[in-house]
Length: 164
Image 1 (cartoon, helix red, strand yellow):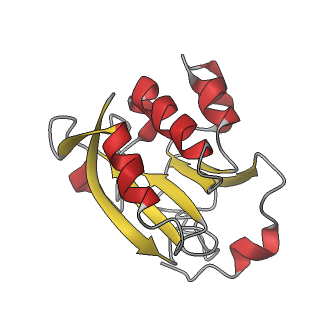
Image 2 (cartoon, one colour):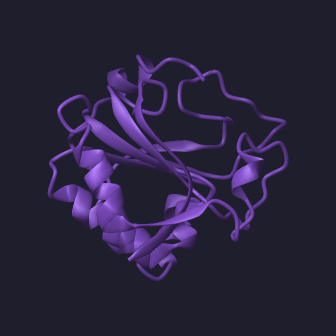
């Protein structure tokens, strides 16, 4: 299944707990003012990659990483491909985390939303609000929430993530 991505980083310490591969999806219709990644908004930009090929790239790093972070753009705007990717990653036993400009409650109402959430260990959710910056790791603004969707991670791990 094809996924439109903006970028892939095989190794990062700033995009979640531990050492992680990071996939930035391409396309976001939310358009938060002051967004950290405005070049990811154009849904025709970036490049397409088969989810199987992307998992192979991640698998090549699996001995050096603890998890995978999906960012954007807005990952939920490609729900079928996102679910396919996350399901395939589940076979690797890596932590799976996603940033979304949508709230947890909203994602639960989306087609494929509950299934996507079932594949995640962590979700950082909520639109970026430029006038309410956060000093906490992983949160761009104070309204955003960290949701622990499994027992794989603990709050103290989040506190150790370097501030971007």
